[in-house]
Length: 214
Ligand code: AMP
Image (cartoon, rainbow, N blue to C red; front, top):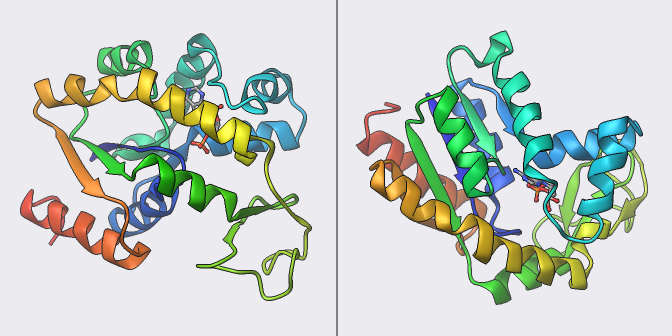
C-alpha cells in the first residue's frame, strides 16, 4: 500500500504516519527526519538542507526528488510505504506520479492558530530527535530527553518566525496537492484537532471502510 500523509506543521502527521506504519507493517519515510539525521551527521546533504530548513523554507525540489527516488527504490519499499512530508510541492507530486501509483493521499488538517500553538510547545531532543510536547507529552525531567538523556531544544525551524514562514509555504505550495489528488480520486481529509488516539481511530476507520485493513 502506497500512502502519502500531508498536513500543516504540528498537525501530528509524523505521529500518525508512525502509528500507521506499525499497523500496516510498511516503512515510514519522513523527509524531514532524513534531513535532520543528515544535519546531525553534517553530511553534504545535511549542510545544504540546513540553510533552507533553519529559515522555515522548503529544501529545493531537485534535492528532495532525487533523495526520494533513491529511497523508494530500496527493497523495504516493495510492499508499500508511508511518505510523511513528501510530496510538498506540485513538481514533487508530479515526479512521484511518474514513478509509482499512490493508493491514498491523506491530509491531516488543523487551523493555523492551532499549528502555531502546538509547535510553540514542542521540544526536540538534540541527540536522538525524540519529540516532546510541554502539555501532551512532557519529559519526565525538564529539558531532558526520557529516551537518551539528551538536552531538549526548540528546533530552529520551530521558532515562531520560521513556523509562520512554514505555514505560508504550506498554503501556497502544498495545498494545491489537494486538488491534484482529488482528481485522482485518492484524497481523504482528517480533522487533526482531536487527541492523537482519536485521530488515529478516525484514520483506521477510513482504512477499514476502504478495506485496506481488517
Ligand atoms: P517536517 O519534519 O516534515 O516538518 O520537515 C522539516 C523541514 O524539512 C521542512 O520545513 C522543510 O524545510 C524540509 N522538508 C521536509 N520535507 C520536504 C519536502 N518534501 N520538500 C522540501 N522540503 C522538505
